[in-house]
Amino acid sequence: CSSEFVPAFDNSAMDGFAVRTGDCGSASPGGPVVLRIKETVRAGTLANVEIEPGEAVKIMTGAPLPLGADAVVMVEATSSEEDGIVRILQTPEIGEHIRRRGEDVRCGDLILREGTRIRPYELALLAAQGIANVSVIRKPSVSLLATGDELLEFTEPLSPGKIRNSNGPALAAALSRWGILPRYQGIVKDDRQSMREAFQKELNDSDVLLVSGGVSVGDFDYTKALLEELGLQVIFWRVAIKPGKPLLFGLLRNKLVFGLPGNPISVMVCLEEFVRPALEKMQGHTPRYPSYHLQGNLENEYRKEEARQQYIFCQVSETSEGFRVHVIRPQGSAMLGMACRANALALAPVGVKFLEKGMGVAFRWLK
Ligand code: AMP
Ligand code: MG
Image (cartoon, rainbow, N blue to C red):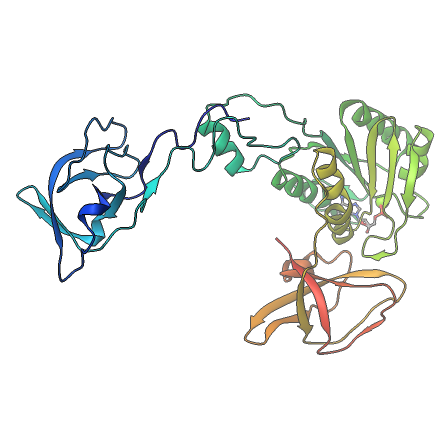
């Protein structure tokens, strides 16, 4: 609850002149009202002055309103002061350009409900009230592990048969944009012992474990089996989406575990569609599933798998007839170059297998 009024005192919303409206009834550019300037009040000072009929007080934005004044005429509606007088060129309304004590927040008002996300606006209100400490839900700690014998860190030179770990940096970058600095734990080989040790360690240290790779059905995909050995309660494994089908989600003690597909595009789609809502919910927010609330028309056709919901990378442009959606071809779950040419992600539902040119599709921007 608020313990102070905001604003704390009546003050001016403009640089101008505090006046009595009764004096300015007929002011116009052709027939200005002439007032005597009694004083100047600056922001941060006290207005120990009262305006008498025929007088004005020069006032700055944020400065306290002098007694007797019931409006402020902005500088732009006056003509230059000379010999201590000002010409008022516009009839002010009562209360014009005055910010009244408590008009925004009154003492005792509930200002922030429990569960409110503290955006810069909320933070500013807390600061304005002098509230330095608030109880918040702790941000979840998140560990990132990339699995794969083929992986090298991005600082390493490429050697035959190897690829660089792009998932680690991509996940870390996305999480940090959402306000979470993850524990970046690099690469683990497709080796049961090292994977088990790494999982155990991260499950002890973090609230959420994100593992990329090894959740599919390859001979060396140990992630799921090992996590189950450690006690994972699988909530779901494999989802009817493309990309991202091998996604695994489960609970281990009170920790959330996501087994993300290895493919770099799949990993990002699963992160945004599944991990982000979970992280938000853990922080007390109603999950904001990425909403595909924008609508555009396809510029080119696209054939998809009927049984899966597909996230399609597109280049969307705005025209006078609405948004035009150009599907980037080919699409592929490992095609980072393709994704970098896209500015939007369109959503095509289960049950549809052919998207015709001109058809309407839902999309969201890729931020
Ligand atoms: P997996 O699910 O382990 O079979 O991996 C599927 C595909 O994703 C393979 O082509 C992997 O090489 C690739 N991949 C796995 N992890 C990463 C990673 N951290 N960065 C980039 N590509 C990866
Ligand atoms: Mg692998």
